[in-house]
Image (cartoon, rainbow, N blue to C red; front, side):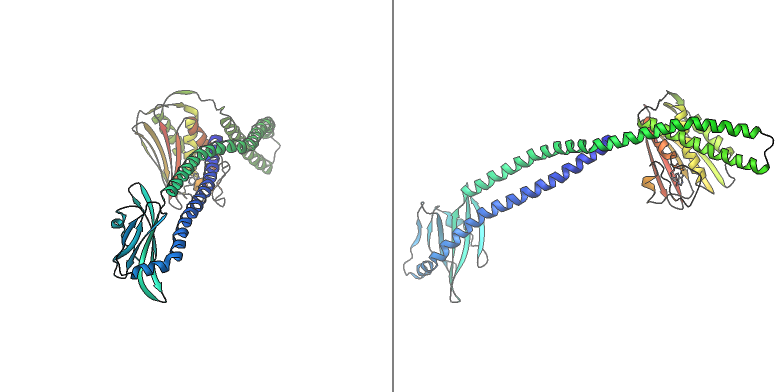
Length: 407
Ligand code: ADP
């Protein structure tokens, strides 16, 4: 149980820390790359504002000057007239002009790869006093900045991996720390239950002895005998409760002794069903569907106790209808099913019925203690099996127990 809680806590801590990490790294990446990109765009825009008038003048020069090659420039540009014909330009990379697809819209920003180079292209319209003269495509080499962004990305990925591992370790450590007081409180409570049940046994057996003694007294009135019978019923209930608590306390401490032997499970089920059918109400049909000759290596008494708990519940929570008990084998598994057409269990109660002292629908008082199914589960767990319940309220319930055959 502690292992599972610790696992869950580790998972929760790690996921919370990782979410914070991803958020932080995402924001950091966005801010850095946005800042670098914006700087490049601002530089091109600044150049355009400075040179805008010159671009328009270039546009109307009679002489077609073509494109000048100047590898030492930072910003290159190509000026087009309204018809989209190239009039003039200054380029840093030869033959690039043919690759530049005239970007759509009046003003757009584009990033492209050209060979090993990364380029930023910004298209600007040349408009003065509302009159459109043409447009210019400006660009700059941003390979250096792209490499910086790539390096930052890889560094952040590396950091994410490193911190994920660190956070998983921290999550595990914090979960361990959080478990210490929980474990201490649980062990204390476990010890209390175990000690209290032990201490209560002696006064209870004295109480029993006194009841026996009183019953042998001849002078008791009819009313006195009635009171005595009531006291015996209550004492038996208390005895059952104490034994159940002791059983669970031992199971928690992993001190549940198992006397494993090869048991004919088919016979065990048949006999237990027979015992129950003798005292069942007429309105209930007990149907058995038990495969013969099935053996299980188990503690016979405990498995009998498990079947009795499930059958006892089925009979207690069914007024009329049928109870079907079956035993089946499927590949490596052995399956016991106990199904009834009784009250059923609501979907809000169903997830809790294996909890200690949990009793669904208290208005339907049936004299239970709420420990039966927790004991059933601990018996199944001790044998390495699994137990599950399904139910539809008002229609009935089905309990399935699985055992692996090797066990
Ligand atoms: P109890 O002693 O109250 O029967 P259990 O641990 O055996 O305690 O069962 C827990 C609760 O689950 C019961 O109070 C009952 O409401 C519900 N329950 C168990 N088995 C059945 C069943 N076959 N049909 C309907 N309800 C059931």
